[in-house]
Image 1: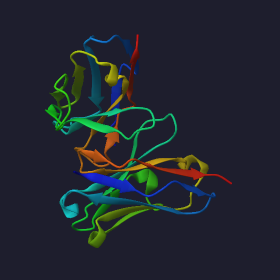
Image 2 (image 1 turned 120 degrees about the vertical axis):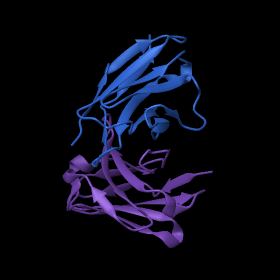
Image 3 (image 1 turned 90 degrees about the vertical axis):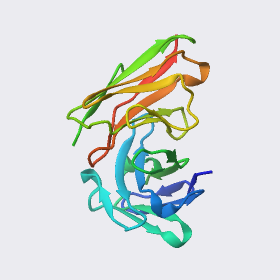
Image 4 (image 1 turned 30 degrees about the vertical axis):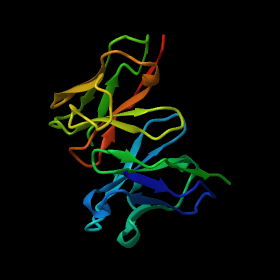
Length: 115
Length: 107
C-alpha cells in the first residue's frame, strides 16, 4: 500500500534551517510528483511547492521563493523540504503529498520555531 | 494566483442530513479540483479528484460536481465519522491553492 513516512518533530531557533524528509513506499517513486503543504495551528492548508522525482524539476510558491528547496534521493525514494531563515510564523505542521491530486499524504512533521 | 473561496465557512448538521459545500475559483480551472477531508490532528484525506471522481475507498455518499469556476461537494447522508473540515484545492495552475475550509459539526 502507498505510504509516505515523514521525519520527526523539530524545534528550531529563529534564523535556523530545517530539513524534513518524506520516504515513499508502495509505488514507483519517480512516477508521481511530490507536493509540500503546511498548516499552522488552527489555520488552513498552504501549498509550498512541488518536485518531480523523475526529473528533479521544482516549483515554489512566491511566498517561499529563496527560502525553500525541495530535493530528492531516488535511490531511497525520499523527498526533502528544506526551509531556511526560520521565523516564528513558520511554526506549523509540514506535509508531503503524492501527486497533483494529493491522493496520499504523509502524517505531517511539526516544526516549532522558538527562541 | 487563483483564489479559492468556500461557503459556508461552517455548518451544523445532523446524522442523516444531506450536506452541500460550495467552492469557487477566481478564474476557470476546468475540472482540476480536488476535495479533502481533515480531522483534528490528522493529515488531510483525499475524497474527490478531477471535480467528480471518487478516490478509491471513499464511500459513495460523497460526490463532487462542477467545472470552470463553480464546484460542489455533497454528502448525501451525513454519518458520525463525517464531522470534519473540508477543503477544496485547484491543481490546474501553479501555485496550487486551497480554499479556506468548511467545518462540519454536529447540530
